[in-house]
Length: 197
Image (tube, rainbow, N blue to C red):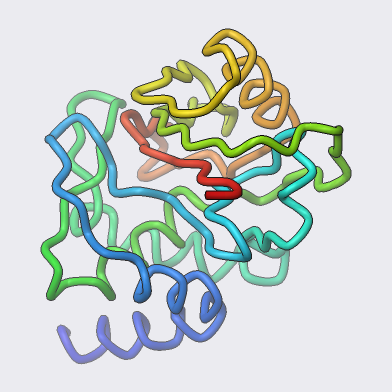
């Protein structure tokens, strides 16, 4: 049974090569139990899971779960639900993986908190350096909610960066998590934008 899971795991990694290699290059940071591992896709900058209005995001790449991958992902979600998530009621958080478990970390991200839709055509004249870390949840409807700034470095006010992140999040969708007729929300997902450092 473990061999079958491993083969499915390897097959799934084939569709997420870009995000897997990005995370391989990214050092692990310790997280507490309320925060899912960082969701960071590496392009020229560390650009988060969805675009914000910052012209330095031109070189960024974003992981998106394609329609043709969805059926496989839904099947694998059933198998890896308890491997990737800790749930109470219909509220889940991601398990924290050690350095030597990077493949599991990437698999869980790809299965449970990779967007199915983002809008890429947002640009403005902002070009100052920025580092912002924030958390959010994926609601039972697959929407981004409860965005909170954890840390911010840059010459932009927290209210303004929160507005930019929320604007991008409004155009972002995730496949709702449904297991055995129960719809779950995933809380404490941590994300980051690091631009122009």
